Image 1 (cartoon, rainbow, N blue to C red):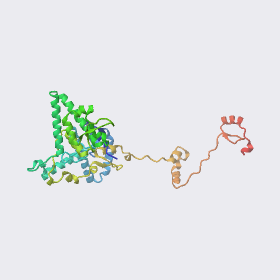
Image 2 (cartoon, rainbow, N blue to C red):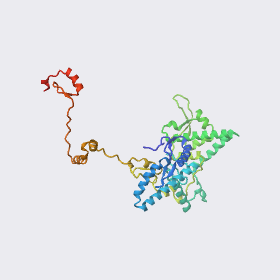
Image 3 (cartoon, rainbow, N blue to C red):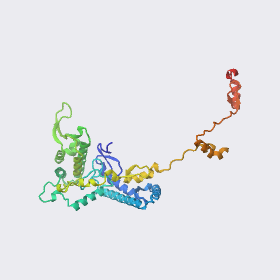
Image 4 (cartoon, one colour):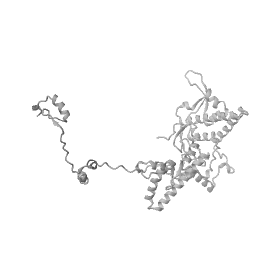
Length: 404
């Protein structure tokens, strides 16, 4: 099963909802602000829990902590780890709300701003970036462009994208003159269309998503009218060709991308459209930061916690909510007691324990004989109550001999 949003959308790393287009970048800040306002720490375990679940969670967590208090050293170490993760989670949410974090890959996971590693979760991104910065400072890792006698410190692809983005802004400002509001609207429209184009080129398998007709009015109004935008698409890999969309029609100018866009190229284009500077390369003699970060905890192991009741694994920011509602933590219903249900309130109530013991030993009780109440018809030998017997006796035509 693929990742949520792998068919053209992205999954929010906070609430796990899927979004299409550019909706996620507007949603994630609001989602982080709401999550911060709705979270509180449990007074017993220190894990984040929703405010509406705090009372019920505290009752269960208090009972569990009492059971684990036989080993105070291990319990204290566990609680300390919970508190550190809760603090890291709050720091990450605060940075997302303020706009310091928010660079996501195609799957909706965070991208490290130092080494470029993708697939980082909400509880990992802050610690991962701190480790990367510490290793850079301790081992003297500097971009190649900062070293004397070294050329090509930045990725040429990212540099070309940044240059075309600057030219695009200049084209739009020059065409609008003093109307700054119109220039802003046209720039936003152009960037949104470009994002949709590159995402479709990456995630959609159909060739029609990699074929752009220049005479299309919608495309021409948003993108095609700006030469810098067309050059940016050519930097991505689109080629100018003559193509006929219908059989028998005359060929028209198109921009065509032969193969699907890679996720790495997509991320570079999205960063350029968002105005982020090109990522500097790391000096070859110093190794790769991604290789240095390989010794860190695995993504899933760093994010998942096992439920104390059902042993299923959940994200750290979801585990407290699950344990509050986990069915395995609730007491199992008592087994239905047939003997007590039958004999309670009768003269045989004093024999309940003896009967239950006999049933457990495999002794079965004799079936109860129920004496028919009322009258028996002498012809058909059927039993009736007094009212029904009077009515039946007038219509019964059975032969007593055949009944016997």
